[in-house]
Amino acid sequence: LCAALGACTSMTLRMYAGRKDLPLDRVSVEVTHRKVPVADLPDHVPDDGATEVDVFDRRIRLEGDLADDQRASLLRIAEKCPVHRTLERRAHIQSRLIDERATST
Image (cartoon, rainbow, N blue to C red; front, side):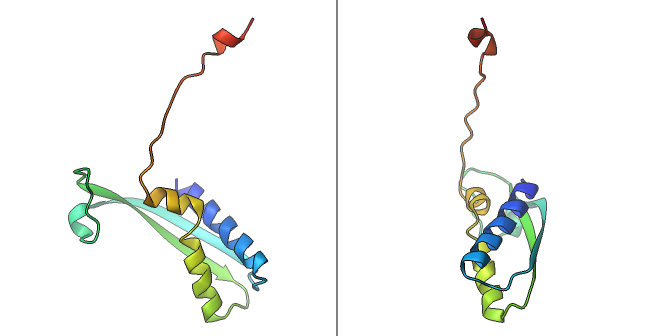
């Protein structure tokens, strides 16, 4: 998940910078994961009775001749990367087996 979040963030920022013609030369993203007791995050109230919350720490390095407002805009865009948005929402994963024996003749 950390690798997916980092890669998606980087790609999202590169695409945005390209569309807006921002002088972004390089993006690097480091993501770490930890479990934190719910009591340590007073703003987060899980409704599922969980005692711990997954916290992803994302550090984004932007290289290029970017103004402060451009850097702030890129940080806002990072919050909208598809993996970030998926992790913030609840997700449901459906798993099923594909019976390859049924398709071979």
